[in-house]
Length: 509
Image 1: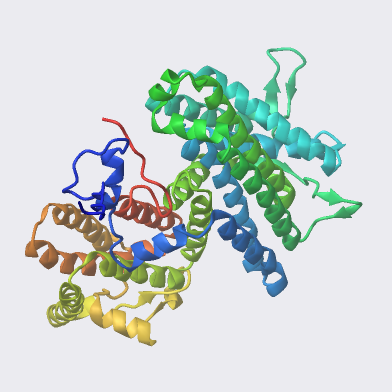
Image 2: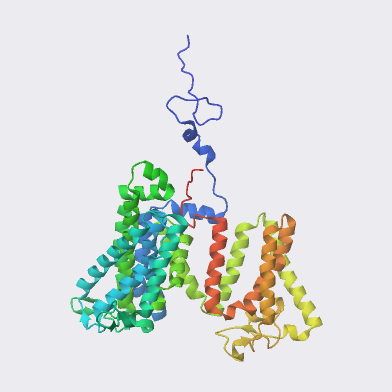
């Protein structure tokens, strides 16, 4: 009789039979893991393995050092604006990312806090409350408002919840615009509550120990400190029983209710906590800008904050921070045509590098784009000499001096694209409009093409996109910036629906 014990079969092996006490589906989970493909995905996976606390600590340290490393007021103001968005994105992530509540009235909490702080700390009512008194009152008041507004919607979900909460946001904007002659149901005459379309000005800055904070760098440090407190509090909440219950509510509210979780109370708590973070951001807004205005709390701001959460990855605190930084910096860079031009071409090249494989296909498409542009330029120049004699847009493009024909960038683009002489200098955009409509049709056709036809059609589509960008969109910064952001989000959602650092949701079907 042999003393050698036969080896036990590996439960994860396909040849292994059912094992007592071992779940077969879980034991073979390694076989179902998807290996990250491509440099971007591997980089994302590497960053995701770093502890969230370390990522947030590094972010706080970097931002806190910016006022020390530079005195450029433009850089400091962009940093301060970005940190405000970081706070707003972190607050929205509680309801949207953790609890799965589509709260479209979130921006109303931000505006309510800013206006309440302005009324308590400005000549509007002659009140000049100290910071230590006004800030807690505003935050607590915003939390209560969030709880009260969530009460009527606690039994709603999905599209119905989105519509009702959106109504709250629209109602708030209407109120602050019309609140300069508010009549309390006919008692006591009209009162100026919000200042109407001009808002409330001369808001007091924050004060600590008799020192008024009037410098931009002061508010950067306040925002960093506020975010640090918020991040720690949200991290503890996320790892608590409440945080786990929020995530259960997000994944399957019906299953959570069956498991005896207080679904309604969890929804109310998530909205109230997010409102509290927005309340802190609102107090900083009023003091930093020394005024509050209705245009700061409209639908455009709501969409911007939502795009930050979606881009970074709903449910991931480091992800929404990255999303807030990327979106605000991107929108700021797109303000000037020269910067926007670099962003546009880098985005196209980056998209091609990520999606086109093997490398010979990428080389063929890039070479085809270059050759196609040179051929089109030569043909148009021979048939219609005026069609290649124009300049490209630089600066703000408000006069002829902003359209140049010199410089290596201008020369390269003018010999690759087509710039009709004086067409865009005199704001005759017919050619650009026709090209824009054609580009949309080509993109739609591209989505239906298969095989090598797709690669062949991609060449003129890229060239036409560059033509439309240079001759039409680059001159319209207010319209182009949100449009470009929308394209980035669409591409990201097609490649990674969960966002940069979000976790894909598991749905039971």
